[in-house]
Length: 222
Image (cartoon, rainbow, N blue to C red; front, top):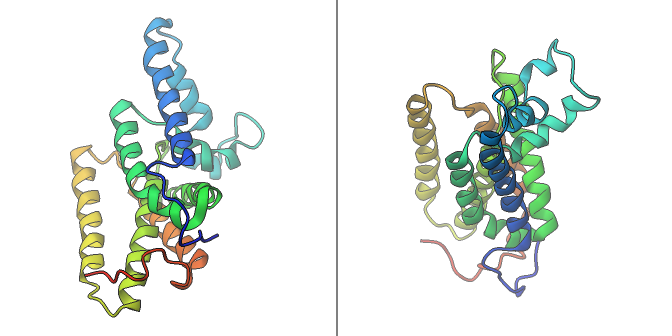
């Protein structure tokens, strides 16, 4: 799943544009069409009912269609609660996803996105209480944080460089989640962030166990 060290680097690979495009198109449809529909009908609401992650479906709720208990582990990662929610996640995805595409290739990145989304959903299903649904790409986005931070740790350990920057970044993510949790009144799926992060670090560890194909091997970190 590793890429060749001399492979051309694209600023935003097509696979990144594909995921951003799907999320942006869905959000645009919800934002533009819902105001034109009767009050009793909501395109966003319908998408949430069928595509959001509902933890109670893993307990005692009956699914609305066959396979919903499975599809929701991925479908939630393409839906958002609003434009700013979608924009924030997509900007981070574009920023962090580039290195993942370089290292794993387009198919590897897509697999990373899906596995981290599943990891985020699994953690939310295990740790969340109540009937509140979860949606958004942040589980997969935190998976990219986990992968890129693992690769930074991997490089630093190989070159015997200080590990404090990685630890500071990890602490920063924890602080950010705590602040966001209070800013949004507790409506933060920190469980999905945690699950996605751990899944991303694990996938990175399995996919790139050594620095043999690291395109930045000759540039030790500071």
